[in-house]
Length: 263
Length: 284
Image (cartoon, rainbow over all chains, first blue to last red; front, side, top):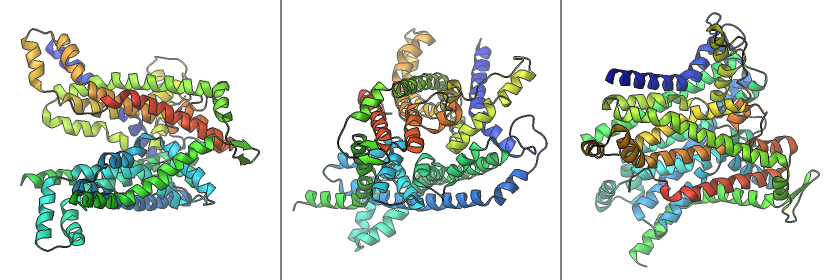
């Protein structure tokens, strides 16, 4: 009986893992397909599609745009999120609950509606679509997360250390740059990397707010219209590998922090 | 000025930049969307006299009532299916797998989360296509003689959604399950409850916070998603976000798109209002 139970459970877990990994495996395997269509049977392995991808000027430009948008929006998210979380955690202002609710609010709204709002608003003001607007939109959607992560990392022990620094004569600016930021570095990096990853992958807002200079997900989207193509698999694989590497860096940083606390 | 007033001022001042950003680029555009939804498109321009025409169109035109109904159906099927797949998975992970394997397995299970959203839907297309992996596997094994239509159907949309949300819901349910003290289940067993009774009367009720949070997140994210139904559903059936995008990109009817967006916000808001009190992963 017991062994049947274990067998059933193991099978179930394996089936779920199979379901979860099926599209990823198909994506990666067929990016190395030698033939021109990304469906079975697999005809020979080659790096041909990666070569074509790197030779594709539009894709490469889109890749650069995506990295630019992600870096700039993640920096803005982290900085704004950090000072807001600092203000809230250290000064406990009256109305803190309302403040927090307001800053978190964009999480509850579909990206499509946020993108539509920004696109309507900017065109009303006569501002044309550009990567700059995508950066603005990505800060809107990722600021709540950066803020929430940083707020969760702030505690009263840090406050004691900051007080000690102040008693020793450090000014407010020095307290923040020399004491608070180094103490919170893992959280800051986590907020930055998460904002980066989510921005770099975002599609709908980027679609609504760009015209000629597009980001990678938008370029992949237009490539899809011409049919299933191993080059798209190659692009998808690269996006996946980069995102997962960032995820592991984040995880590694957060583990180091836990180790550091134990000491 | 008391010291509390002073720190209130400082706290708000430091939150200032973030507040300003959220107000300018989130609250203001949302307000504008609501305003535009009461305008009308006349030819290529906007008629700014307030009218309920767009809302009348939404509720009188079959296309939009059908889109709303289809959206709700697809999302409800997605929520139920994701919970049914994820619950046993999270349960086995939390209670039957040695503690040191749990986190690595969980991280592995959410890894595909980090494939690009567009690319993930596209990969499902490769799996479900007429000459795709599933059809070819079933034909080779003799299960079917000719390929069946999987891509460009509601089923494909649901599969794409369930794939994404199983990962998410597994996390929230796992978080709830691991918060239940083992002694509760032991006590139930000691008092003579069968394993089934222990599950139904102790574990399941105590894990409801994770189920509710997971279901809510799935509902909100799925009903607002344009990509999965567009790529996998393939335009055979129009869901609400696709209806919005159609107005924006093809028709250029922004007031109608805005009114449909308001409808989407109202639906999400209503669901939030129902679940608001139960939306916390911590046990009370």
